Image 1 (cartoon, rainbow, N blue to C red):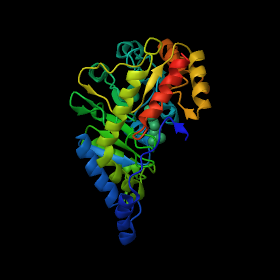
Image 2: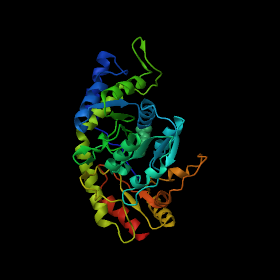
Image 3: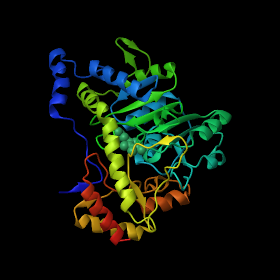
Length: 359
Ligand SMILES: *Cc1c(COP(=O)(O)O)cnc(C)c1O
């Protein structure tokens, strides 16, 4: 059977049916319905955060975040992430300024941020890549000193913790994606976590066209999500701990089998960090090796993915170039291996030996 880089978790169908039955009783399909509010309540508890809004996807979450913080001019950001991080900035007519990454975590290098700040800079937006936290302390210090806002794209961070807190609880705003491919999902979906209640109110208005009933406060957009998506989230949330645990077992199998003389990986040696096993990235010696390994796996119907490629400062539609040699180099050699809750360990053995044979 084909093995993909990921496989969406599906709860037992009866559990989903049980939850959506209520929708047929109250005919409330969307617009901040009872299941959406229930999911928001459970997410706040699980993540231990005060302000959280369930939204349509992880990209609209970033776009609404950029609007609600009234950002202008330049946004300092990371070149090593999914394209949605960068394109959301462009979509809001803001200017991304790329700062290179750290070679250990692949997160934005906080030591390089200050040199990129100009009078036009209004925020720092970084991704907790593969779930590993950015240097949130240093970034907060820089932001305070220069009066900048901080947004984290936490799309990989669900279930990961740093110093006892969810990775999603830092900055002015953290966004997350609950897309079907993520550790926790609601088919499509996402959330916006913010650090104060006034900001949360503004985000809530933007999520729903800028009005409440007949009171029109501001322009807005449609960032809402439906009762059916919330129902999937409600089914999946109690299973997250088991899902993460299974992913850990698969990851540890790879750890034990892969040839680390020829491969490297981002560090988990971050004090106070507990990983959510969101991805299993390996770094090959060269792009040629990466292509060779990918080809060998494809012959066995196994599909890894190049997360993340290209380095976002090299997106073909950008009309400027900020050199980021480390990100560009890592992006050429990074391959995410298949990792999901029920990937059989025999398949992990097969994948590892195909890789080792092609190093
Ligand atoms: C998945 C992902 C997104 C986009 O989330 P969607 O819910 O698909 O819109 C944004 N940023 C990162 C880093 C992601 O991995």
